[in-house]
Image (cartoon, rainbow, N blue to C red; front, side):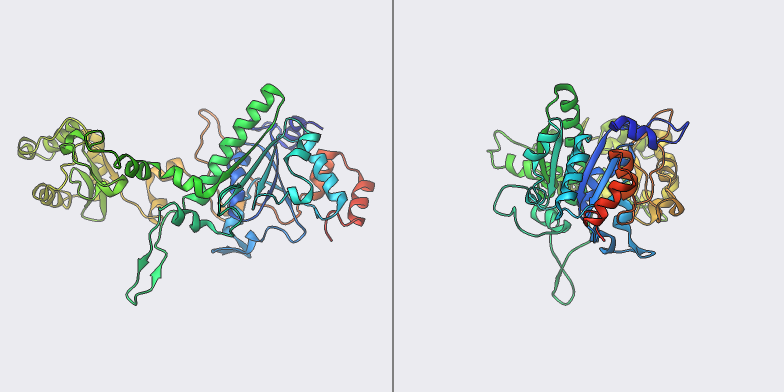
Length: 423
């Protein structure tokens, strides 16, 4: 059966066609790197998660545990089908190769070389399917002195310089609250790689091998800071700051925002807002609307990118002005007079934000086992089907073998008797 036929067989009659319908991916993954195909499954790819008999222990890792299963598993493995294969058995290896014959891509989401040790490296896979795209996603990648080191998600952010240690009142260092970048960005770069490889393979008939490191990905997302430090190694005759700052060099990235005044956070009467009038036109609109043109006349600023850095007198004036309205009133004000003012939410409060409620409606817990955010990609004039719940270990073993490999009862029994499908 072709990938298109199998994918079509899974579609509900009358349902909208998914953008990646007809794409099949065979995935061997553990823990968070399984997110490399989450968005692809959301977009309609048939992702077959091949698991060992004991399953992906990510089901038990991290908090919260929702009715016995981790939210991590429920989120990153949603929309996938689980097939148990004990790749220590030659019969299971043969089944894996049969799956690859009709697949577009194979994902190795674990330490590099795991499939090679089972006789399922890229060279072997392309013998059965010259169009196969093979991608490995790992912590530190396939090269370099750290390539064989064990690691977890936060390691990629500390390595990339994204997260710095903090010290508590007893003098102990601790991991501060932060957004995990590497463990999230790595899978997104990997998904981009998979799609680019599939496009090339369908055009040329030739597959490819690629890899992505979550540590590299954290550094790549944080490119502005590292590239700014690198640029500042050059003489000031070649690399300066903005014209609005008198060409003085500010600290790289968001650290350079600390001294901002026309671009900074301010306390409202019931919370905080972000004020972003760094363009002169926006700043003028604001001053006119609050009846404080004296502020504009005294500090008109440059045309672009002028944060009025370090102007404490102006900052005090703005502090008092912003305390006079609620956050919601300031947002309405900004939209009405055309000056940028944004909400300042927390991961908890954002769910009550009306923009969030309009753009990111929760996929309900009765669908996925826990309330989850949808894929942020939207089809204009159409909707993506909701993903299915993350599978239990081997939940789709028989289904996959029947509809992908046309296995009958006798073949399934033979595989079970050989131990290829676990106990």
